[in-house]
Image 1 (cartoon, rainbow, N blue to C red):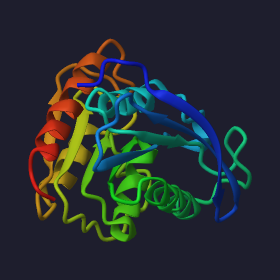
Image 2 (spheres, rainbow, N blue to C red):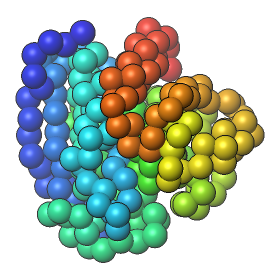
Image 3 (cartoon, helix red, strand yellow):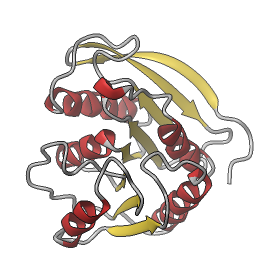
Image 4 (cartoon, one colour):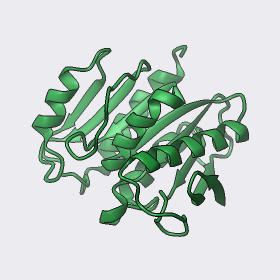
Length: 216
């Protein structure tokens, strides 16, 4: 696992609605072969690339030497544009994936997201064809996902005390997925995983370690 702090680069990425503010973090040393794009929670409810769960997702990959790009959706921070009902935000995520593919041309994408961002990661997976997908507390009852067809291995993490996304709804939705996702439920954890970020990190690392050891 990587032990040194990642090299940080603040970026402006060309997106479909203008500039997207982004933060590229590359562990030292980095492990070739993968990169992660991490999507933040709802732009109209305070979601940004600095959200602590988003930060935890990025750090989980850094522990394995995998570089990441976190970014602000259109209309958030220094990103231009305005909220576009999840449709425009999906296009934003795909633009960041394409940027990262150009930055690491021989690496395969992993898509990760939290809450609204998890829904965007799921939506974007149809076009991005990620090698792995991680959806934390996916807001399946708050964003129109359309047909869900990820064919890669993917992980869903949620707390059974989530006060924003209904755990029962997520579990019922996940039970209908084919192929099935790996589902990890943290007993007593809230939507923002207060006091439980370490367990979230461990779940993501365990999934990612298995992904690194298996062919895509």
